[in-house]
Image 1: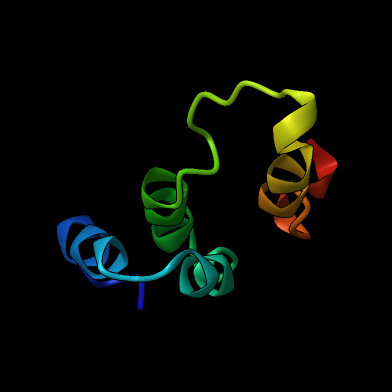
Image 2: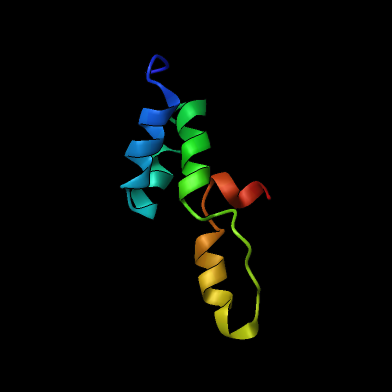
Length: 67
């Protein structure tokens, strides 16, 4: 798994759903990098009272719970 070029892993991850990306997060450092790049987890987010449920669902995964 560690022998795959990062470009190939990036290409694979670019086609996956957020749920699928979340499942790959702990697979390897290469996949972690791509998941963080394509998942949208670390994009800018404005928290308001009307979008708090969406915020909670986006940032409540096991990997992100430490933030």
